[in-house]
Length: 129
Length: 382
Image (tube, rainbow over all chains, first blue to last red; front, side):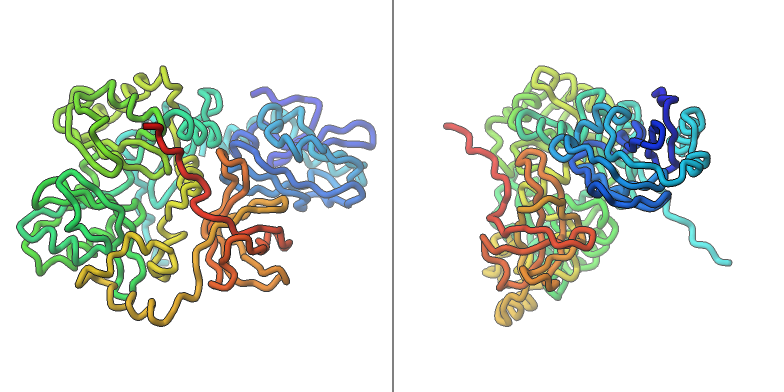
């Protein structure tokens, strides 16, 4: 899997794609593959404050419940409503299925995140366990 | 510091095959088992589940254990340690039953097969293999009957779904149409002689479980031959994930969840498999007392009426938010397309139609008590 280089990644398997002061957040292809058939995505409504590194939502597959961790701090501006009825979109296209959009509070936080190449190395090691 | 060595993880003879097929492997009761096969070959829990409901799926269930009781007093031994009435079994017939503690709670649930006049085979759960074998051996010493642990001798493959009989018939000379549900036969299978094939399963669907020699080469050959024979029916390999959702839709109990050493037969609502008219069996006296004392909690089926998935161990609340019970198994139901659960609640909350809540991440989400099983396979047209 080639991970898009237009975004940053967390070790908890989220991606964040920044556009000026705004950013979209989703989970990685590796995450959707480990979870299996995704049946439920729960994210907070617009206006909610996210704190970098803290949980902000849940994604569930048939078998597992998994927390979503905020890659960066900010305020939710938009929620991907399509995922409420079609959570399987995340399996089909994880990198095209954003979950929330936020306004970044402190763009400097992004420096701590992984590049596509570093993330790819990270998951290769994790999968090798 | 004194360290305790972790027990080695166990592998079935098909382990390398699962890995070769790209299965996602998990540890289950000490076994390295496939939870699901890759989406790239048309699998994943949902697809595997649907295949079993509509066509056929193939499972490696070699982690299940097998105990053979044989000898002049084998029937007496089986009657003493199990709650169903094995004297009703004809040769070649099987029954669902359970091994009970003197308290009327569960050592394990089992399928008892009568293979010959004086020979019975108990098929037991993976997580309770050693416990069950010791229990059976220790509690049958007074009978003239040999007790053997055959768990490692068999690779057990389940072929499940409405097309299971058509698939398996291609590979055997035994007349499978003559084998009724919960009966067994012996025959040639994939060139192997005298193979035990039982019309049993854990999916609430028609199907067979076959017991072949557990060497890796034979196991792999038979696995691939079954898959190849199933190609025309759209057969897929299935993992423990689908096995769990299938059995949950059919309300088939899972040890450690719906049944355990702290849950008795009446609570688990397995009355029809417990024959109190039998004069004696371990647990009978306690069950008689429990019946007289009255039932306090009961196993109910729940369907979520609000967004959210009930999971194993979640709390069940009454309408007012007071904790009244717990979920034993909960999951999305891939065929029914609902979020369902089994839960223990006090008797007074158990009526069908009763509105309850399940606590999901601190919030009560609405659920209603529904009739079980959630899924019943359609009766075949004559």
